[in-house]
Image (cartoon, rainbow, N blue to C red; front, side, top):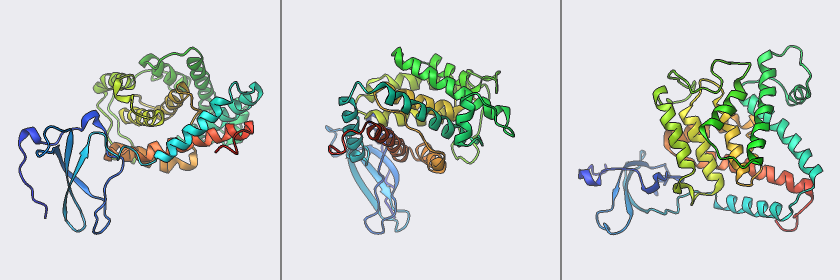
Length: 330
């Protein structure tokens, strides 16, 4: 068994500089099992360096393992190649600007329908992709609830608001977040639309328990402050957005509509940084929820970053294909 040596108060476990999580957890060199982190403290042998000393144990063979990690660890994020590929495609698209207006408008309409359908379907809306398109055209679908119709109409209004924010180069604020939420829930839950929850909540099927309602306002202020702080300057835009998206859902600031609002905020931030929208497909619903849960419970953001990055790449591919550019440059 691992030696459970006593640590002095000054060397006890504490967050790493910048609160950077493990993106890739080390495996046991004997059996390949994922190691369990027991403790984290400054390496006493190298006090002059910012070296973290981590104490792990293998849950299978019970071997104790010690590892040193500098502040700028290579474990930042495993899909560096994915980021590089995305940035190459983004540059190709940027170099082709100004884009033909008719192509941009066609893709905008396509993505609006796709985004609205999938974001609502993830939350249980039963309208099909074609039915969503028809509702957006102003036609009522027989046999479908009024709420489902409003969810489609409201989402389009919220997307138009996001586009307005982008055009006006407005920063993300709590007011913007509440306004987006208001647009999502109006005519559905008017008394809660645009208002932080005043009760404690639990999430069905999740081990994560959101903060108490009294903590929601300060947590939201902290999240906005983090977004515009120096802590994010070294993060890739997609990693920053993915972490923000998870942390928003983690706080669960509203009584209802957190998922749709969170995905609108995700795409607002992506578009502000010059990326196309990421449409999380309803077919990936389980994968999406599992990735959010992993970040909440294990502080491991790898999967949610990867999922969002892949959807950004899919949208980039859509633009590149529609424009007929760069096949020989990728």
